Length: 592
Image 1 (cartoon, one colour):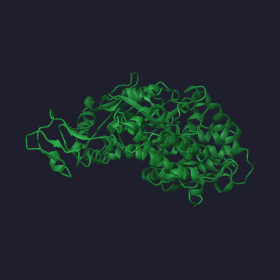
Image 2: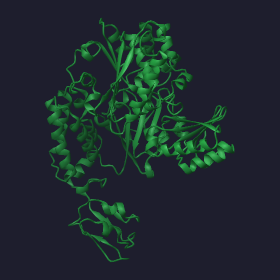
Image 3: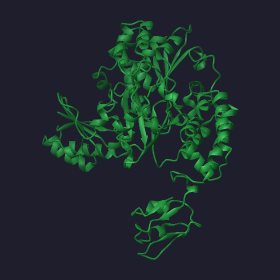
Image 4: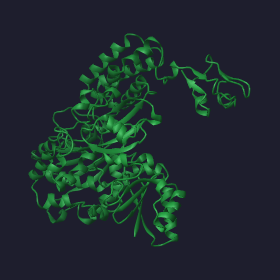
């Protein structure tokens, strides 16, 4: 029987996949037994949602942009008639044949380890996870391996923490394992707060059991019997599917007491975070789990010695734990075969911004930035010029297109002044103002500062005030030196990673795009025509048709002109709201 899988993660639902799923449900009700209908997670091609896969044996056809009307066509022609609807095919996979479909280039350069099941199985079905080999790694760890053997495999694989710092995972586990304590904890950081990042959310929504299995294996390795998944409350679907998965795992004996008859006990609790970005820092996260205000602690002591409730604790993020079952089943050497000498394995990236193919990509470590942007991301929207990428979230940095050859790994990216972070990659084109971009991210980190450190609390505010002045045309020549001095002081004196990296967007844009700062300060001009205070709105007489739509929508009556005659904007009273640009369908209104 043919199977129909509809992508029902957050990205799919936002694109209308619920209506698509409901239409297939109606078609199935009218033709019982014609196919089996299932939901699935995100396959990574968020830009082509709603996605629907028709699977028959080993043959798989993934359709993109499936509206209810397209669902009717797929049902009549493919499911009933046996003819693939070629104009809607995104991916086509058949035994013995090369990957086909319009989105084949997006997939060909990827290696899916963390995302191995996302989009391929029903995330709410334990049986389907088991069908992919799920929980075999746990069985091996509990029944065939000693704790130090588990840690050795993870060490030998070269897996480094995927939450941003890149600390060797096996070494981190060994620190917690060496502590003598009757109580230890395993914590999963799912507090994904970077703007433009959605890797962890997609894994939790598409393959929650892989994270659970990795956490239990960690518990066995370090001698812990209790785990916490700290997931932001803004991820309701991830929390719902995690809850379903935890209940199913307990019922099947993968969680609880005497797991698989091994004598090992372990259970997991979900803790919902309230959206504080600082709680992505592990000691602030521990404070939040304990019911306290999320503020970082002084280290040392480090979490492996005194973490959650002052007990030895291991904390990794979603992606790190999801790698572990694959490593135990396939071996350390198989994982280490991917990536570079010091950055082994794969990395999941969330491509967002001005890239054509926004979504998820999992690639071997060391792939150049240009390959991610152009081979997988499909290039820049409207084929505009590639300008830069922001990596590492709001605490990361901007890497210019001139460094697009840089390998994406834990050594090369920090050398540019940015950080790897958890995997968010915001792509920018030539219409992006780098000063405004720096101001935007600094505004985020300043707002999210917990306030504990004076340099972070006050220093970021002073930097933000300077950047705001610059983007409003009130910059001063001495502002550049002030920003550099403040950035260095904040990085040096802040307690946690938020403050230590908050100046990165400013410092990297100052380093790579100094001419934009100079233009804003000296010429009172925004080269990207993005900063509203530094641009004028004009009407191109060659394109204006005199339709009067812009004049009717101007809130301050700054646009004058007779019907069917060229209109003019009075810049002396223009409020620069941009409404005229939005409503003009002829592209006649522009900024200069």
